[in-house]
Length: 201
Image 1 (tube, rainbow, N blue to C red):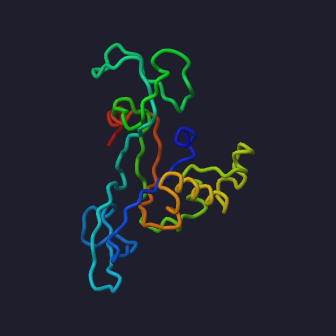
Image 2: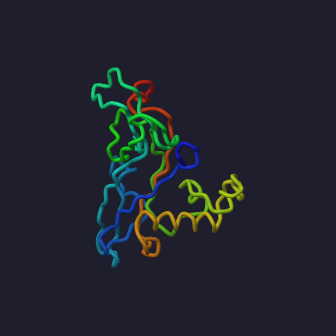
Image 3: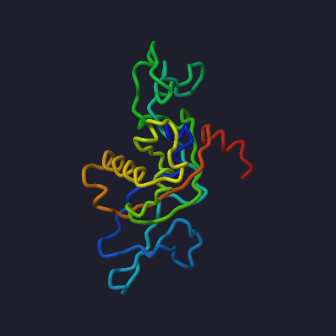
C-alpha cells in the first residue's frame, strides 16, 4: 500500500557481517562494480573482507503482493487478470481466495522498482527523513490523514519504523541494531518486462 501511495522509496535488508569485521562505509578501490561491493575491516584493522550486496544501483526488481485469479493459465491466454488484494476485498468468484505474495508469478507483478542508491549502515542510524521514505506513518499522521512534519520525519516516525521492524523480525530486533543495506528506489507502475521493452536503455 505504501508503494502504491507513493510513500515508500526505501527498504532495508539485514546482512550481518562476520562478527570480527566492521564495514568501512566505502566501496573497495579497483573493482569495476563499485555499487555492489563493500569493504569490511577486521576490528584490529589487520585485514579486510569483501562482501557482495545482492542489488546495485540500476537494478530493476519486481514486486510480489497478495493476489488472486479466476483461472490458472500459465500461457496467460484468455483468462481474467489477477485481483490485487491491496485494492480491497473482492466479493465474488475465486477472487475470494487470496494467494500469498510468495506465489505471485513474475508476469502478474504490476510494480517495478529501480534501485537508485545503496548504503551500508547500522539499523538505528536511520534518519527521520529515511524513516518516512520507508513508508511508515506515525499515529498522529494516520489520524490527520496527512504528514504533520511535511514529510521531513521526526522521532515519532522513527518509533513507527522501530515498531514495524520488530513486527517483521521479532521482539528485540531493533535493539540488536544489526548492519543493514539501505536501498533507495523509484517506483514504476507496470510489469518489469513491459518496462524493459519500452525503455531506451
